[in-house]
Length: 283
Image (cartoon, rainbow, N blue to C red; front, side, top):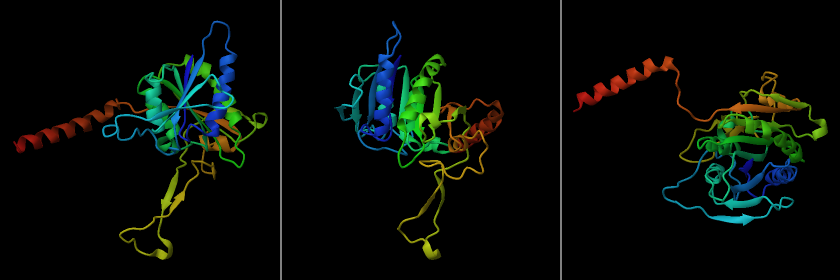
């Protein structure tokens, strides 16, 4: 099994280092006859909230990279790229650094990625991008805290790998782990994407002043990331509620794909006919 490790916090982030160290042990503990390899291809700097953006490749058709060393993981080659996580995942998945992976593992993100943050997260955007070229992926995040227990999330992630490898290609899982020691973790459950969002509202400006031509619009942030806040409006099996109650949440995701719902065909064909009539009228 070959792993590509990436993240959105940067190649020097402690979450990625913890994951790489656990992967190093996973490689050394391989059963006889089973080959295991891993490679890190991650952004040079933090690219949180970038989703699956790859940047302006047409005006900048090359990527700067540099070799890095991760303490405690000497056999896991690591590269930092001047690129967002999705592009790192894509280049790594295509074998640009000498290893073509079976699975992309993205993280460990410092802060939960639950609810609607799955749309905006660079951690998740990396595995969504990998799926477009046939790779399965695991996004790993841990609840924010004063002292973050990355090792707990890494230990859970390692246990998932064999099952993800056995799943069909392009399988994507989102793993969120509470900020607890392994001994205090209550277990792992199948989580559903909650209604929690990153931004709850914006403005109004202080004092009710009207908007000018420029200025700053204050944002009211929600509970989706990095902290899991009030989950009183969530179902017990929602991802945020599970993490808040001490369970790790594992959620299957699907990347962009054609909507094949036949119920939409009539509306689509009506739109096509309207466009065709319009084009004929203006010829």
